[in-house]
Length: 485
Image (cartoon, rainbow, N blue to C red):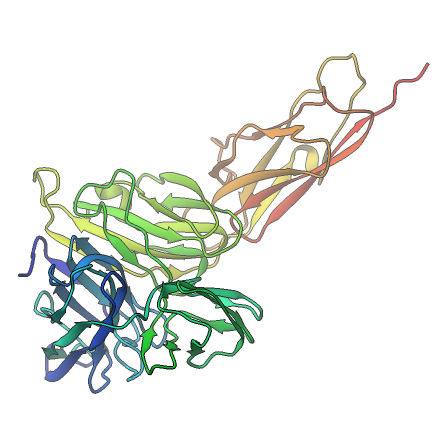
């Protein structure tokens, strides 16, 4: 049974001169046949047969509780890496809405449009998996509507071989990167292949774990991993970067959604405008091995600012506000490239909490980060103190951040970080984020404060960096002379 709890819109591209809905074309979605052991894992694949270009669509899937025990993950794939959307997962029900600006979904016979990875129950025997494609219109890049039929797949409990997870599941991975495959039924004779990727070595850690080493750089997301045993049993698995449910304070139905982000990364992007009666959440994922600082700058009329730090491989869900605060979109700036997408929930005026009129996802658009400049009072390029032990602490010095982005209608949003080369955290700033001054009379300068009490005699250096943008740095020096005589 389909759980239709809210209407959905997905952005797509129409080609000039083409009337939307001018043609209806047949599209068949075939569900894979899978064999997996009881208590193991099955990845159900949904293919376009024959391949077609899909720019938007939706599948609602209800798994048989007599065979499956839980849904582990949902992924959508595009040959161009631009698949986006979200999945609403409740128990064994998944409602997946997706789009691709290039129509890359369904374009390749060897790449599923989506996968659902689910745990198999301990008492499983067999089941049929189908899906309902009628929740929203399926379209091609020209805006033509597909007439969609689904061919069910057969699930069979049997054998010992299954794959439950692959880590990392995606990203551009360098030569020598270890890949962990988790599952069941592995042995010393198990072989592993990755389509269009070089594997330097395969190590069988145990019956539930294999470690591969890449022999060349590759983008792993969507690459078929084929695991085989000498008895003829085999399993195919398409890895993907994991999603994370929307958390924070957004109301239902945004809370708990699993965002599906494009593979492209951005350091500076702008989100789409939203209506006055919309709640907006920007989903951000950090694929880097180090934390990334984020600044979300809501444009007119309120110019709200939200900051966050995303841990390595972590997620953040930021909102520029409700209604008019997001009506002009938002600038998103990051100190390193990250993945991102916008979720918008249109709420009927005066409706009770949790009521949704439309829920949809849109990708972001890349922009140029406004170059920032750190300005030091008096025109110097450095901040410097000389301090003698036993005297009063040195007074603060002041800097400001300005933007040289001539085409910007709004000042640039920035964050500030401090890094000392030695002596510990002896340097502080009065604020770590804000809006660039740009000759504004209301600009609040940043106080730079030295705390030398714990420093031994010597010279000390630190750097203050404004980001995200092309970093603008100001070196900072502190000298504590030796006490003589």
